[in-house]
Length: 188
Image (cartoon, rainbow, N blue to C red; front, side):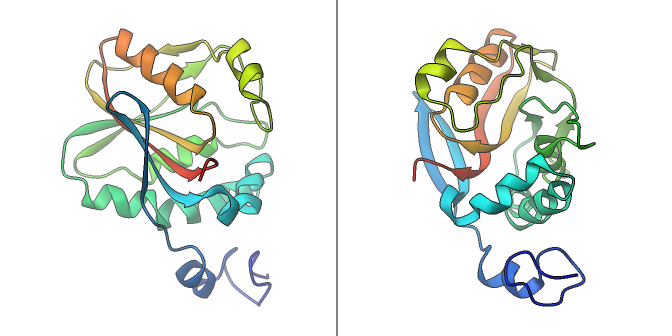
Protein backbone atom coordinates (compact mmCIF):
# COMPACT_ATOMS: atom_id res chain seq x y z
CA UNK A 1 0.00 0.00 0.00
CA UNK A 2 1.09 3.61 -0.45
CA UNK A 3 0.96 6.53 1.97
CA UNK A 4 -1.94 8.81 1.02
CA UNK A 5 0.19 11.90 1.62
CA UNK A 6 3.65 11.19 0.14
CA UNK A 7 2.78 8.08 -1.92
CA UNK A 8 5.77 6.11 -0.63
CA UNK A 9 5.38 2.46 0.29
CA UNK A 10 3.77 2.15 3.71
CA UNK A 11 2.08 -0.51 5.80
CA UNK A 12 -0.36 2.11 7.12
CA UNK A 13 -2.52 4.64 5.26
CA UNK A 14 -0.39 7.61 6.31
CA UNK A 15 3.24 6.74 6.92
CA UNK A 16 4.94 7.54 10.22
CA UNK A 17 7.22 10.10 8.54
CA UNK A 18 4.25 12.10 7.19
CA UNK A 19 2.47 11.82 10.52
CA UNK A 20 5.53 13.20 12.28
CA UNK A 21 6.49 15.88 9.76
CA UNK A 22 3.21 16.98 8.18
CA UNK A 23 0.47 16.15 10.68
CA UNK A 24 1.86 17.73 13.82
CA UNK A 25 -1.05 19.50 15.50
CA UNK A 26 -0.98 23.08 16.78
CA UNK A 27 -3.64 23.87 19.35
CA UNK A 28 -5.71 26.92 18.39
CA UNK A 29 -8.56 28.62 20.25
CA UNK A 30 -11.65 30.45 18.99
CA UNK A 31 -14.52 31.89 21.03
CA UNK A 32 -17.94 30.89 19.70
CA UNK A 33 -20.22 32.19 22.44
CA UNK A 34 -19.32 34.21 25.54
CA UNK A 35 -16.80 32.04 27.40
CA UNK A 36 -17.46 28.98 25.22
CA UNK A 37 -14.42 28.14 23.13
CA UNK A 38 -13.65 25.71 20.37
CA UNK A 39 -10.13 24.30 20.19
CA UNK A 40 -8.77 23.05 16.90
CA UNK A 41 -5.57 21.26 15.96
CA UNK A 42 -5.17 22.05 12.27
CA UNK A 43 -6.07 24.73 9.79
CA UNK A 44 -8.67 23.32 7.41
CA UNK A 45 -6.38 23.83 4.41
CA UNK A 46 -3.67 21.67 6.04
CA UNK A 47 -5.80 18.51 6.08
CA UNK A 48 -8.66 19.30 3.68
CA UNK A 49 -8.09 16.30 1.41
CA UNK A 50 -7.86 13.97 4.41
CA UNK A 51 -11.12 15.33 5.85
CA UNK A 52 -12.95 14.44 2.62
CA UNK A 53 -12.21 10.77 3.27
CA UNK A 54 -15.12 10.77 5.76
CA UNK A 55 -17.36 10.25 2.74
CA UNK A 56 -15.64 6.92 1.99
CA UNK A 57 -14.83 3.73 3.86
CA UNK A 58 -11.11 4.59 4.06
CA UNK A 59 -12.06 7.60 6.20
CA UNK A 60 -12.40 5.36 9.24
CA UNK A 61 -8.64 4.70 9.06
CA UNK A 62 -7.69 8.29 8.27
CA UNK A 63 -9.84 9.78 11.04
CA UNK A 64 -8.32 7.36 13.54
CA UNK A 65 -4.82 8.49 12.56
CA UNK A 66 -5.80 12.17 12.76
CA UNK A 67 -7.54 11.64 16.10
CA UNK A 68 -4.60 9.78 17.63
CA UNK A 69 -2.20 12.54 16.54
CA UNK A 70 -4.32 15.34 18.02
CA UNK A 71 -7.34 14.68 20.25
CA UNK A 72 -5.77 11.65 21.91
CA UNK A 73 -2.70 13.62 22.92
CA UNK A 74 -4.91 16.42 24.25
CA UNK A 75 -6.99 13.98 26.31
CA UNK A 76 -3.92 12.47 27.94
CA UNK A 77 -2.99 15.92 29.27
CA UNK A 78 -6.53 16.83 30.41
CA UNK A 79 -7.08 16.13 34.11
CA UNK A 80 -10.68 17.14 34.86
CA UNK A 81 -13.54 14.64 34.90
CA UNK A 82 -15.94 15.11 31.98
CA UNK A 83 -18.06 13.28 29.46
CA UNK A 84 -17.08 13.23 25.78
CA UNK A 85 -20.04 13.89 23.48
CA UNK A 86 -19.66 13.52 19.71
CA UNK A 87 -21.81 15.71 17.50
CA UNK A 88 -24.36 13.41 15.84
CA UNK A 89 -22.46 10.11 16.05
CA UNK A 90 -24.88 8.16 13.86
CA UNK A 91 -23.27 5.51 11.68
CA UNK A 92 -23.07 6.57 8.03
CA UNK A 93 -23.69 4.44 4.96
CA UNK A 94 -19.95 3.70 4.99
CA UNK A 95 -20.30 1.75 8.22
CA UNK A 96 -18.81 4.16 10.75
CA UNK A 97 -19.25 7.57 12.38
CA UNK A 98 -16.33 9.93 11.93
CA UNK A 99 -17.29 11.94 15.03
CA UNK A 100 -17.50 8.75 17.10
CA UNK A 101 -13.95 7.85 16.02
CA UNK A 102 -12.74 11.27 17.17
CA UNK A 103 -14.57 11.04 20.50
CA UNK A 104 -13.41 7.47 21.13
CA UNK A 105 -9.77 8.50 20.76
CA UNK A 106 -10.17 10.77 23.81
CA UNK A 107 -11.35 8.08 26.20
CA UNK A 108 -9.16 8.12 29.30
CA UNK A 109 -9.22 7.78 33.08
CA UNK A 110 -10.83 11.22 33.44
CA UNK A 111 -12.80 11.41 30.22
CA UNK A 112 -15.75 9.09 29.76
CA UNK A 113 -17.20 8.45 26.33
CA UNK A 114 -20.94 9.17 26.06
CA UNK A 115 -22.21 7.35 22.98
CA UNK A 116 -25.41 8.23 21.13
CA UNK A 117 -26.34 11.18 23.32
CA UNK A 118 -26.50 14.12 20.89
CA UNK A 119 -28.29 13.39 17.65
CA UNK A 120 -29.55 15.63 14.88
CA UNK A 121 -33.12 15.29 13.70
CA UNK A 122 -32.21 17.13 10.50
CA UNK A 123 -29.54 15.20 8.60
CA UNK A 124 -28.95 17.81 5.88
CA UNK A 125 -25.29 18.23 4.95
CA UNK A 126 -23.68 21.59 5.67
CA UNK A 127 -20.58 20.86 3.58
CA UNK A 128 -19.92 23.83 1.30
CA UNK A 129 -23.15 25.59 2.30
CA UNK A 130 -23.51 29.27 3.21
CA UNK A 131 -24.21 30.68 6.64
CA UNK A 132 -27.73 31.62 5.48
CA UNK A 133 -28.38 27.99 4.49
CA UNK A 134 -27.04 26.70 7.81
CA UNK A 135 -29.17 29.13 9.80
CA UNK A 136 -32.34 28.28 7.88
CA UNK A 137 -31.71 24.51 8.25
CA UNK A 138 -30.89 23.88 11.92
CA UNK A 139 -29.84 20.42 13.04
CA UNK A 140 -32.63 20.21 15.64
CA UNK A 141 -30.46 18.30 18.10
CA UNK A 142 -31.80 16.05 20.83
CA UNK A 143 -29.60 15.48 23.89
CA UNK A 144 -30.21 12.33 25.91
CA UNK A 145 -27.09 12.45 28.02
CA UNK A 146 -26.27 13.04 31.63
CA UNK A 147 -26.35 16.36 33.46
CA UNK A 148 -22.59 16.62 33.77
CA UNK A 149 -19.57 18.53 32.48
CA UNK A 150 -19.06 17.60 28.84
CA UNK A 151 -16.72 18.25 25.94
CA UNK A 152 -18.34 18.50 22.51
CA UNK A 153 -16.40 16.86 19.64
CA UNK A 154 -16.74 17.44 15.89
CA UNK A 155 -14.44 17.28 12.88
CA UNK A 156 -14.60 20.84 11.51
CA UNK A 157 -15.80 24.24 12.66
CA UNK A 158 -16.67 26.66 9.88
CA UNK A 159 -19.32 29.19 10.87
CA UNK A 160 -19.86 27.63 14.29
CA UNK A 161 -23.62 27.15 13.82
CA UNK A 162 -23.54 23.41 14.57
CA UNK A 163 -21.52 23.82 17.75
CA UNK A 164 -23.57 26.82 18.90
CA UNK A 165 -26.79 24.86 18.43
CA UNK A 166 -25.33 21.82 20.20
CA UNK A 167 -24.15 24.05 23.06
CA UNK A 168 -27.63 25.51 23.51
CA UNK A 169 -29.36 22.14 23.43
CA UNK A 170 -27.10 20.44 25.96
CA UNK A 171 -27.18 23.51 28.21
CA UNK A 172 -31.01 23.50 28.21
CA UNK A 173 -30.91 19.78 29.08
CA UNK A 174 -28.87 20.51 32.20
CA UNK A 175 -25.39 19.51 31.01
CA UNK A 176 -22.42 21.86 31.28
CA UNK A 177 -20.49 22.11 27.99
CA UNK A 178 -16.94 23.08 28.99
CA UNK A 179 -15.64 23.62 25.44
CA UNK A 180 -15.57 21.98 22.01
CA UNK A 181 -12.74 20.16 20.23
CA UNK A 182 -12.46 19.84 16.47
CA UNK A 183 -9.77 18.59 14.14
CA UNK A 184 -9.81 21.67 11.92
CA UNK A 185 -10.95 25.27 11.86
CA UNK A 186 -12.03 26.45 8.40
CA UNK A 187 -11.90 30.13 9.40
CA UNK A 188 -8.17 30.21 10.08
